[in-house]
Image 1 (cartoon, rainbow, N blue to C red):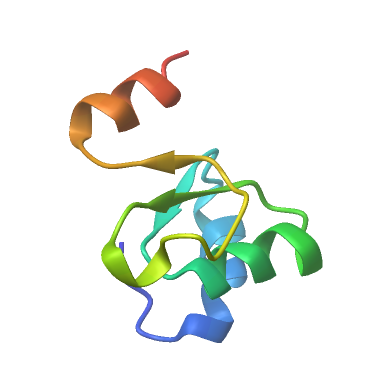
Image 2 (image 1 turned 45 degrees about the vertical axis):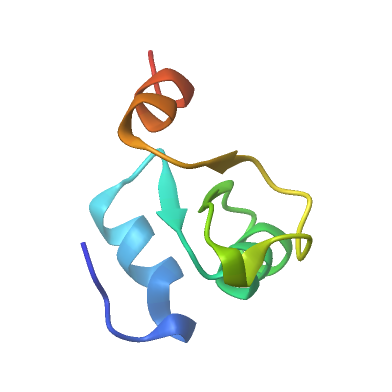
Length: 69
């Protein structure tokens, strides 16, 4: 799901009742964690290395393992 607006993702996450949210923008993930109390997962990309302390994934297998019920 793409919301198109970095600052309005929390509303979309809540509207869809999502349990997991993955984004490659570290700032968005940090904001969701600190301001919205949503636990994000950062998709590993060169522009977000060493910019956060959040869980990180780099492929579908890692996403599947982290989100396994």
